[in-house]
Length: 236
Image 1 (cartoon, rainbow, N blue to C red):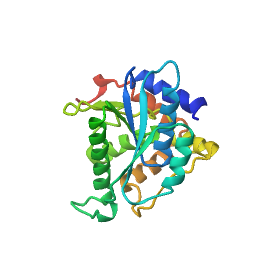
Image 2: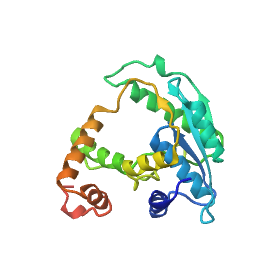
Image 3: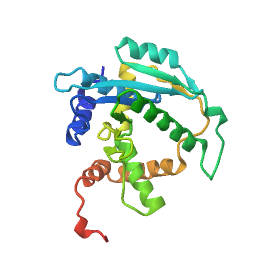
Image 4: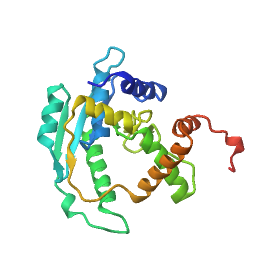
């Protein structure tokens, strides 16, 4: 199971942002990749600890292009992880529209399915596997594309549905996750879709890497800055 520094970082985020309360029922959106898998295992571990009293279940939307699903389920269930697969093979039918790739539509569909299941089955929170790297990249993407200062919020509650979206991995970086997956020898699923990550996100990832090479520790300082915003020195 998840332990050590990674679990400590998850607990720091959970406690700092009050992401989990006693009695919560949390549905984890699981793609089968390293981030969502680590999130599910971390929350499963926390749910077994005496300091927390909540239930958690992983939810996989099989859109028709997932490879290695059976091995993945065997691994997770052997650890006692509660996980459900929803079959809805829509992926191959998606097409480009309004200058958006099928990834945009696919993401919207998956989130809609997650929310529908959560509301129908008594879950009050949905957890997503966005990491520290995602938060930093999103910050630069918002500057580049929209000219605004914004990143991924740790928790966001929808007024209409009442569901809260939480992101317990925001203090965890990709390198830590990659090492954990390797150590635990997790048989990750393979998304067989041919579309790559968002081009702008890839560019921002490269930009952060360049800055980090020139100024080691930059990423940590930027994360720190998200907590210390001097509004009086902004042009508001």
